[in-house]
Length: 54
Image (cartoon, rainbow, N blue to C red; front, side, top):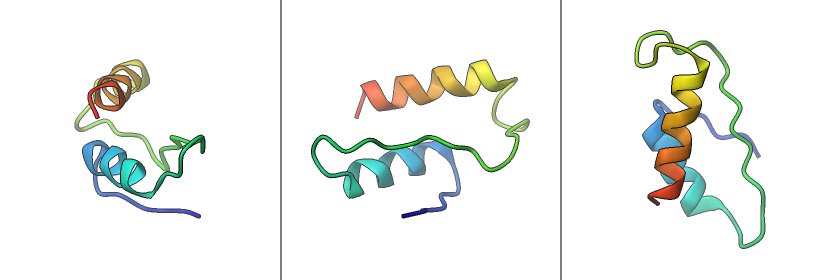
């Protein structure tokens, strides 16, 4: 299944709603995100923060 989200917060929320227990969710950005994030490390850190706070 592929789901497109408008932003990282939406992607995490949709993933939480759709995921089945013990199922992996792959975070795979389709393009660079230069506007909201400085670099891939910053984006990855924000992703981890969102996932841990869900």
